[in-house]
Length: 396
Image (cartoon, rainbow, N blue to C red; front, side, top):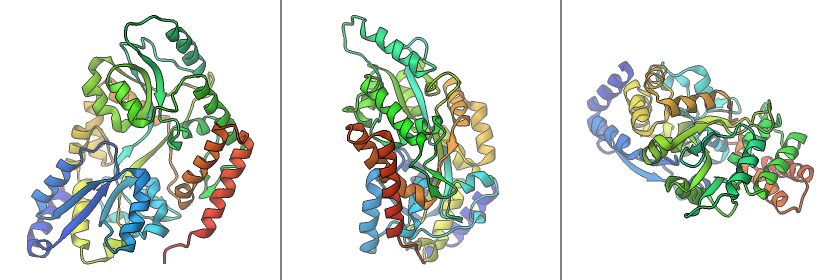
């Protein structure tokens, strides 16, 4: 509260300085209801903010264009691994004391890339879970063998209306990562890409087997699966914590939350988790808008605003006090979401992780089409990411 009050006092005392400032803010969170929070920031501080949403997959290309045109946003809200693009986006380096005292060291470290801090954590979680519709699924599967048996029984039932059994965003590589973790692998280890491993080969083979057995429809993308689940025609959907609020509002008591099934008994999948962070492209923190940007940081890390983020978006706060209040207010599904988080692992934010996504996808697609074995696809991934690293020049 002290930091928030200080922020507001500074803002109002510097109203003449801020009057000419207009911040440009782009966010990529799938929960798009950030606008009221930003609008309230403008009301409380007098600082105008131009707000836009961008799809994560498009942001990198858009940012290159903005930077080349000298029109980069002052702030972006992105998953922490995005700060690994600091050599290309020229993100401002940060100090942890730029934020509030109530955000723990481990949370701050989630935005540390190659030893330096480039992001300000605002929410945490961003992990995948198994959502299910209790009107279709009475007991959630705990292993993928259970899931197959349920699927076989599901297909034999006669129904008046079409229902779908399970789905997830098959061709998006974040959904592959829990299976890589389940086989003991990691895409990046100690800042180095580790893609050419037996774990990656086994994860690819297992993952493809699930899809080919009909447990997911690779022709049904994220939006398709979302609509099926929201309409009540899909039994299972693997998706992230960002969707919880909308699912609770639409499905009500029929919504269930569980961990993603184990690969085999005693062999759990291991999803990734991360923070969502504020980052400052084109070194905006070093420019004339610095005071306004610091006010934005302090505002969104303040305990009161962190609680608003939880209550309005159902996204986990990074402020310690707000987090404890949030836990005390949770219902059963929200507590299950926290339980799933405890079984996840941090997503690396090093530059190697940012580069690895594209390499993983290229190897995955060749494996999916049976053009490469799991071992060959893993080897290709490693070769591609190493080549990319050689072509990226670190920012000065």
